[in-house]
Image 1: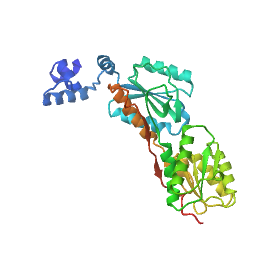
Image 2: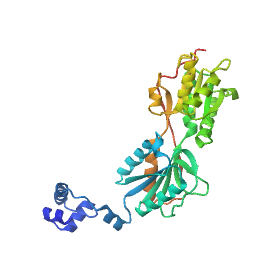
Image 3: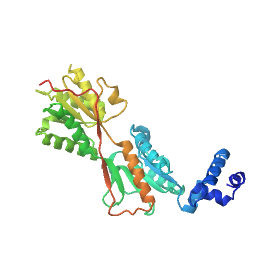
Length: 335
């Protein structure tokens, strides 16, 4: 700062005021100072500034399976972009789903004096409170807190997402619709099955037990469950799948039986998983999950809490909607 002051012909105090905007400086003087600072490559000392403001401008994000989850990057990118809009730096850590490792990361982030924490899960679930001090703001992403933990959270609106997939099929004229769900006991599993039932009920269509199958959340499970549904007498004209990997298996089961998609069977997935959904032939019509939007919402709410917004009546579990991604796996039913 002294070098900038000497080159600009002003005092270090004037340089400080011009760079921080804390006090008014003559426009011409401020422009001269900024020009000199750029020429000299001056960068403000964030640590010193943080000590004065009692903030560092750094936020930590802890994920439980970032390396193996295809959607993790979208959550991180959404949070990162929202942070940059407020000059906040995002620091990312991976716990591998180990509570002990998560606790260690929390201590490391606290040692770095982060202003707050985003705790992200790679699928929608309920989480217990970790050992986080009361004065450290926390927001959950793709997770909800257990009842004894008062904290902001953001998750996908699972019911709306599944209903949207269902409505795409009923809009195409399908009345005989099946659903392939997951055997996982997750909040997403319950929410999506509920969404399918509600949407079909609203359309005046009954979802019979024989039109519901459950399997593992992968293509192998989809091939097995899809095969069972397609072997039934008067097989369904359309199948909604819990995720895109199951949908891929269902399409493979159809191909093995000489049933073309979408002419003989319409299929809709959930996730918009790349490169699965867009690499299939035909491309998979699916409902995208709001991963980037959850990261952005989480960071924006965390910045509000860091700024002093009290956690109380406006404590929220925000549910963000998905949206339909139209490709080529839906057509009007033949019968």
